Image (tube, rainbow, N blue to C red; front, side, top):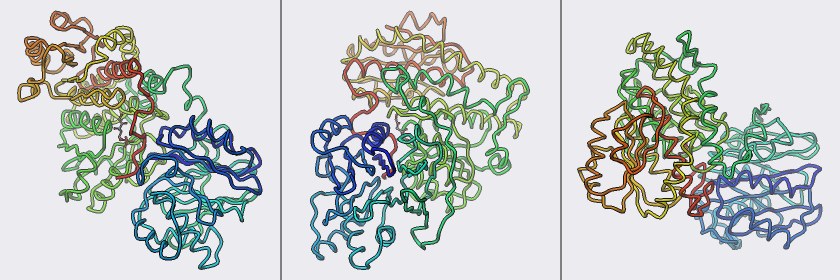
Length: 615
Ligand code: F6R
């Protein structure tokens, strides 16, 4: 939800900030803006639209000189996406400029107060209120920018990652975070600030990740002073060495990040189990589980909280945990869980699944569960993210940066991690035999090769995509482990092609959705050999007799479904619990190709953002 980037140092700020915004555009792309300071003038250009629109406008509007710059790419919360509501925002005097990711919830009350004191506002944003509040504190209290930011933030309620610059103190940028991420890149005589490290990865490997409730004064030629916003105490900043490299955040010859990330899945899955799983020895090592084994294995119940695609991974995990570890599981939308006074006890384990580790609802659900005494376990992709820090223990998915807004490799690596956990618990509890355990590990080791094989259906999938690209609706059906895959397939199609799609358990069809079926309706059915195969074949017959168009995802060599379906996409055979890792692949490719053929912006679908840090 919004990307922020800033630079202060000895280089020209503009190209750094612009490139940084392009890399952060996955976080929001309604509008964009940049402010630059050239030693005497503070200049700004901003516009509704993408960073590319900003570039065209800015270069004809202002000079790009200056060694201090702040940039913002927006996902609108307060105020529609238009030029005026775009960030950065000036204070009334024009001395201060701010960029902000988050929401100031009490902005209305603060705005009324400031209006009484003579302040005027051009935009509808909460951010313009904050920058004027900071200006008001400077005037009233006669304090420096850092202190003023601190006093102002202590009057706000909400979430933020901000960067503020004062043109009369041009050697510093003040940043702060609460609930939205903020990294400071520490270079030689230069500093970078950004929502994640991608804008500065080619300049420095050293970064400070601010903790919630911390602020920093970043001083050119000097240092970074970190403090607690609440009590002003100084914090010794931990300078972390980044593992990220430039290649990981570039498209590497693919047309879109989504396609690159789909094709990265064989490696992402093996990176996720490598070092944890020793298939020949029958061992799984996961520190987060090993260190808390009694607590997790003896849980009365596991509650999984997540949103979107991560919630679908949670549904797959429900099957695996109950099947293999025999622990009752509930899977909850984080946004519902947190607001319905859930019954949680100290014997419960709550697992939060989140690619970004920043999703506001998932974060709030974890906090609530911890307050009620539950043990919180995180499955996140982004190292050091808020959820990974808030949970008592966790296991990372090693998918690498996922930049396409539609989640792909995060989903399959989440399932990989959750499968390993279930197997570990099952072994500890004795609910899976040693030979079965070993067999699962050996089969998991074969999954990357099998994913590669599944990816080879790309040409056939393009043909199917072409045939059905104008379908207004699409149904996805699956049973058992593949019911969540049906939901995920439908979500992928909806979010990037804007075609209405629904996922259903195949057997539920006859309780309503079957009424939708006619000769226009494509129905994607997951019908792998393992898991209720005969029942799914019956469901396919029901669709066929109502003239629906059947696209079936089947186990390699299946002849029975081939007789019935209009198209058949084969995936290699595996054990039932691991089929989602293979059946997901053709559904990702199908939605990708349909969206490309419809001319949609696959990596940045409308109205969406990669990390949802608002409720
Ligand atoms: C769909 C998608 C979203 C996310 C959801 C949760 O492709 O990406 O549905 O899965 O916003 O995000 P995380 O996993 O970051 O908590």
